[in-house]
Image (cartoon, rainbow, N blue to C red; front, side, top):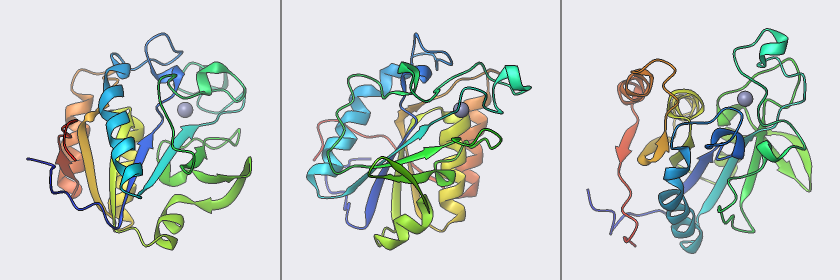
Length: 206
Ligand SMILES: [Zn+2]
């Protein structure tokens, strides 16, 4: 599918959890998670240059978060507030007018989906979550990229569909953990069954 004539009006890009702890060397690394960088950056630049909204979700966990093994959860500590693991993948160039949503910031609440994230404005976490914020901006279509296919990308995609957004997953801008070998494939099957569209983004388009 060629992307040359894609109409991005009424569209927003959602980059899910492209954070140091989910990249190689991080506390909860997605194998080759960093390999999506060139495509993700191209998406960001393309959306920004077209005057479209760019949205970045991030895990923002307190030190004793419920999802951590120490608290009986499934994961090693990751994306802890104030640590380098929380920060974006270093090469990522974020538009100055990008919008940021934090999730999993309460000790006893976990969140995989970006739609559970709350808008960060002037350095404060607001009460406004992603779906109403997108509707306020008259967004009909969301493009989804980031980490990881079988967890937060999956959950964000399914919530986007549930919230009645046209939902397009950029399959060369996501990467899975695959705790079990078929996890990412199964996640993609589920997204497709629920109504997600898949595209492959060509970097030189636009
Ligand atoms: Zn987390």
